[in-house]
Amino acid sequence: MAIPKAARIEKSEPINSETKLLTLAMPAGEPLGFTGGQYVIVNTNIPLPGGKIAKRAYSILSSDQEQAKFQIAVKKIGEGPGSNYMHETQIGAELPFSGPWGQFVMDNDDSSKVLLLATDTGITAALGLIQSAKFKERSKGSRLLWLAESSEYFLPQTFVRNMVAGAVRFDLEIIPSVNHPERFRKAQIILKTALEEWQPQSMFLSGDGALLYPFQEELVNRGVAEKQIKLECFFNNPFKKVAA
Ligand SMILES: Cc1cc2nc3c(=O)[nH]c(=O)nc-3n(C[C@H](O)[C@H](O)[C@H](O)COP(=O)(O)OP(=O)(O)OC[C@H]3O[C@@H](n4cnc5c(N)ncnc54)[C@H](O)[C@@H]3O)c2cc1C
Image (cartoon, helix red, strand yellow):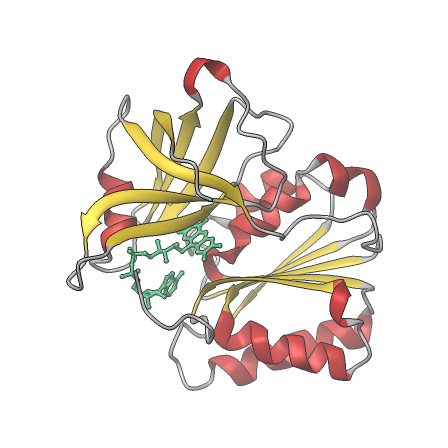
């Protein structure tokens, strides 16, 4: 059951014109109790046309070694209620949320040769995971491959490099934007090329479901065990029936 919580917005920093980095402080410094790779669900209290309230998931970007404060990065998506609400929030305001949620975490039986494949805003889940205590302890020699439409998309490449800080090999590959007819084919070629060069034992996929679900199927067909592939879909989720 979702237990309602609230965190105070301590900082709200524009990273660029489309991205805000929010630092959230738990009341009385109590620990959130999250593991790197998990997310929170923010209750915007904004009613949607069907009457439901807009609640939106945001992966925790900061390291799980700090639990009393955490960071999320939000990309503004058109006129979307959730991302605009997050961009407009003011320092000092209380942000209602539930969580932490999600299984996108390093398990004891995950192998140490990990490929993190993130598309678009899915980079936040990968960065949260890479910074987790468990990942740091077990995954030397792992790789992060980020597919995004430009080196300035959402989080600048330099920002990501600083966060990764040599913990994994990091490559950014440019792919066409969401809904571009060539996007899937180009992303598929990049993945195939990466796999020809290097075979991971575990995979963490985060971001666009329209790319990642077919990739998951392809990886299973190539012999990667299903339980060694974790997927966190941020958008284009084929299993989501109604937007809320
Ligand atoms: C587990 C999880 C973690 C997430 N973590 C983050 C995060 O760390 N940072 C972040 O900015 N967002 C994250 N998201 C996406 C976020 O929850 C919202 O979907 C996003 O902020 C848009 O909400 P909205 O209400 O503004 O727009 P909506 O009206 O809900 O969305 C408009 C449309 O844009 C699509 N969309 C959402 N994100 C993108 C994108 N990147 N590119 C193209 N289309 C998109 C939606 O699927 C929808 O079709 C995450 C989603 C999930 C499920």
